[in-house]
Length: 312
Image (tube, rainbow, N blue to C red; front, side):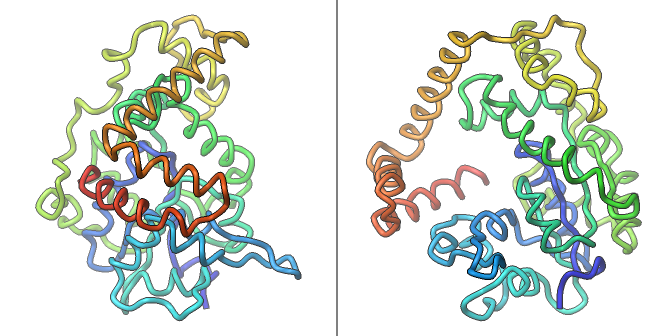
């Protein structure tokens, strides 16, 4: 039975905050198991007549990260799967499952109030810039949106947790002092640090920690872009441990926000078409609009294959 604090560890951080890098490091430990992104566990929960949350299995089957999870585990969970059985099947005997989450903190805590969480933070100005590079946003105003949602949930729910439930790790420290930070993480989990955790470059396409990866926004964002990001984030910046740049925060008005929204949509769709072609993204969009998921099965699988190749 899951739910006790020693059964699993959750890593919680926004997209582009270094969760993939940390996952590769943790998965190099002989006593830990990270199968990949775990948001599917909580993305598709629906209440039953008694108010209990259960997975929507049709939505699960359409989820790229759930299908990646099935490929990564030795044996699939019993059908129909529930959250506890899916977590239990992530790890083998003697291994601690590690969940990698970017959202749904309230749902995690509702189901597992005693779980331990590694809160991974990265400077939101770098997150915004990186999101554009991934094709997930067309400007920094929208590129920082998912960081704001993740950290707002943390501010509302995570900070009520007991001190021994939480370890905060900054991406910048993980890059600059990886062995020290990993030793601290291992102590929190209750295992000994293993040098193999830093040998992830031998089993992935990721390179060794590079100090040039931290605070890139100082060189790669204009003052205008920095002001837009800091204006949208507001007090969450300093609350998360990052200093303001000194640039005047910018707050776009209604017409400015409309222009940024249009710019974002056009850029994201251009990236999708360049990456996946026109037909498959349109099929997925129409299937979602018509609430007919079966229409998008083939398109999603073709897009998933391209996503896996791109992420590698």
